[in-house]
Image 1 (cartoon, rainbow, N blue to C red):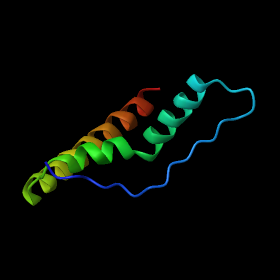
Image 2 (cartoon, rainbow, N blue to C red):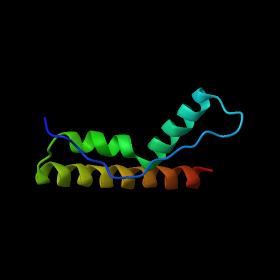
Image 3 (cartoon, rainbow, N blue to C red):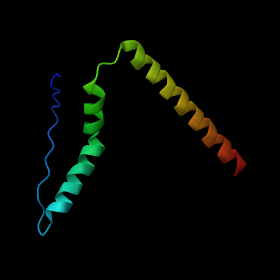
Length: 77
């Protein structure tokens, strides 16, 4: 298996009177916000261009459906 290199600087410094558990929690939150773990998982396996195109298509459809449901909900209220 090949190595995956993610080049984003991620630094979390220990605050005054902060426990190591809180430091780790902050670090994990920062990782999630930067979507580094998601990016790593996506790049772990090769996806054919047609698969990527298909995924984007269905994501776009889901976004449109969600918007329609939201607009219908607003009209009901």
